[in-house]
Structures are given as C-alpha cells and as structure tokens.
Image 1 (tube, rainbow, N blue to C red):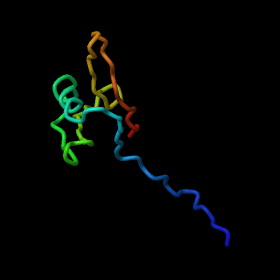
Image 2 (image 1 turned 90 degrees about the horizontal axis):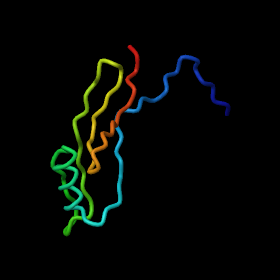
Image 3 (image 1 turned 30 degrees about the vertical axis):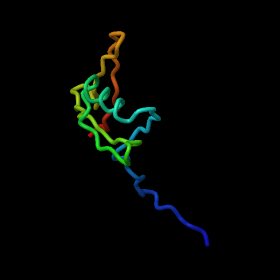
Image 4 (image 1 turned 135 degrees about the horizontal axis):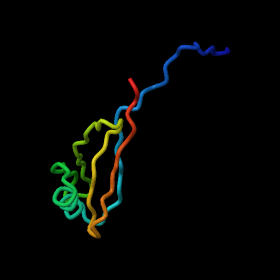
Length: 87
C-alpha cells in the first residue's frame, strides 16, 4: 500500500527539550546548578540520589531569541538559547 503525503501536512512541533548530563554526585551537581546557575531546586530520584531533574526560566528577547545567560567560574558569559519562530 502506497502512502500519499498531503502537500499542506504540518510537521510536528518541537515543544520542549531536556539535556541529560552524567554526574558523579547528584546532590553536589544540583547545588551547583541551583546556586551558581540560578536553576530551580531539583527533584531527586532513588536513594541515594542518582538522578535529578531541574529547570531554569528563559526569556523571550526583542531580537527574536529565547535565552538565558550563565557566568561560568572563569568569568565568561555564556548565552544559551534558541531562535524564535517568526509570527
């Protein structure tokens, strides 16, 4: 059976993402992200914790980007973001 694609069929939209980082100490990592990078308090899983979910607020900027900035220990300012769809 041959499948036909409708010319105006919309592609799925990407709504959220999650980054997974390997860590040696979930509690120490959560403290770093919360205290140094202004992330929200994390939710821990297992006992002792081996996994943590945390997040951070992002802002829509007038220049068409959704982003946040992080100042790392050497003083470099790192911008993390995504381009907003025009509309």
